[in-house]
Image (cartoon, rainbow, N blue to C red; front, top):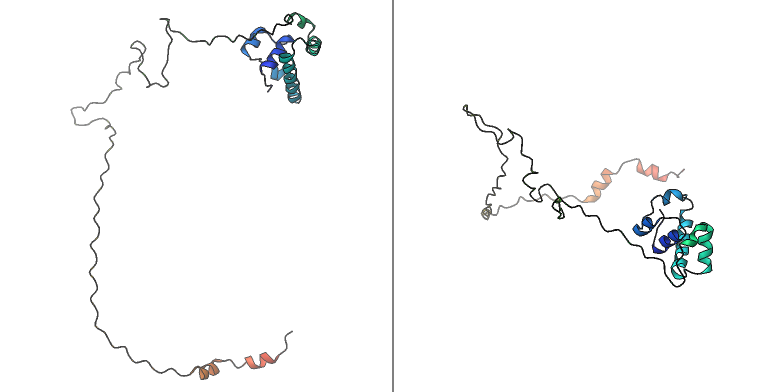
Amino acid sequence: MVPLDKGALSALWLSGLITRQEYDTGKVPGIERTIAKKAGIEFSSLLHQFGIDVLTNLHGATVRKVALAVNPAAKDRFPKRGEPLPEPVPPPPTVKESHTGEEEHRPAGPQAAARPAGKTPQPPAGSGPKKTDGKGKSGPKPFVVKPLSIKPQTAPAPAPAPEAAESVPEPAKKPVASAKPLAAKAAPKHTAPLSKRKPR
């Protein structure tokens, strides 16, 4: 993509590379295909620098030399000394008008505004709501959104306080034997010989 500002457009038009219509609209179609992708950054930079020279020093020797080197016929495009380049005149915006001469504003969507009576298509026959026949059978029921039924919630009743139980005497505990004889009995017999061995 080649960026184009006022200086770049002025430089391209002064060099005779674009037409007056492209200069006025500010759009140069096909410039991306003309410049190679590898040279796009360098070309954009050089075009921008030359565009600044065209805007600041239009009648300088450097601008005339570069423009004539690109296109010798560009000498006819230079204005007289002291006069600037002609300003681009953008084309007026195109507005679609109806047959009555007034601007036609179409709605954003199909249901945004009602269409004129002559342009509104009628629904096909038989597409309306189906009526019940004599046998009691009816067509599809319309979709009806039912309101939410919320049941009131009541807080649960508090549980009654437990009655104080009568104190029951605990059974007497048996005396516990001392821990030393139990530890002596529970110790295995082979620990003493193994503890005397040297580690490998």
